[in-house]
Structures are given as C-alpha cells and as structure tokens.
Length: 126
Image (cartoon, rainbow, N blue to C red; front, side, top):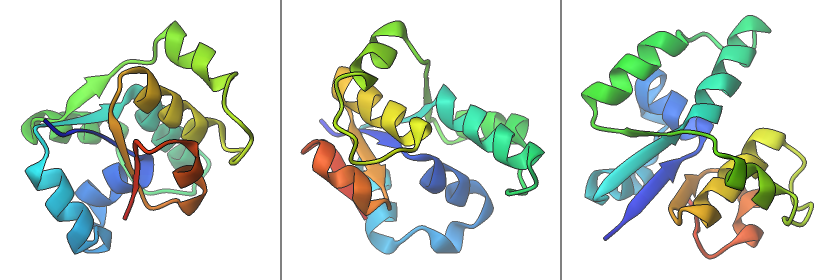
C-alpha cells in the first residue's frame, strides 16, 4: 500500500501548473492508494500569495483537493517534535515539517527538492 504526502510545489503544480508535474510524479500519484497534503502546505501557499510570490487561492486548493480525493494531514504536536530530531540538511521550516510528518505517519514524501532526499528512505524525489 503506497501512501503519499505531496510537497508544497507538487501540490501547487497539480492544480495551477499541471505541465510542471513530471510524468514520473504523475504516475506515482495516480498509482498511490492514498494521497495526503499537509495543512502546512496550505499555510505556506497562503504566505507566499500574501507576499506576492505565488498566484493561487488557498481556499480553491482546499476545495480541489477534496475533488481529487486528497486527504488533509493536520499538523500535530508529534510532527513538530520530530523536527527537533532532524539534521540540518535543509533550513526551510515548511520542508522540514513535511519530512517530520512523513517520518511520523509514516508516508512517502513526494518532492522535487533534492535537499530532502538525505532525510529518509521515505522521501521520493521526482
């Protein structure tokens, strides 16, 4: 059983820039038994929208995730606690939280970010 957690880029691209989703990523997502997105990704997108770094509507993304049968993963205290145990391969707090969530659940984290691969065999870089 393949359970996936999408990183923020892939989640955003899935709905706004579908052509940026690689064929490999598309196949992994379509073959997964369950696809999760983190509440932290919605928060990250909302921040980037407010800063003018991204053009998106976080509420629409939430709606579309439901239409695509993606499952929301809340941020839990145990996820936050695992962040403290991670080496500093990556300094981005959102990415570190996604890694912690993947390790805690466990889920395979689907990402384009090569800096996340050293954290765990659960990280799938596409």
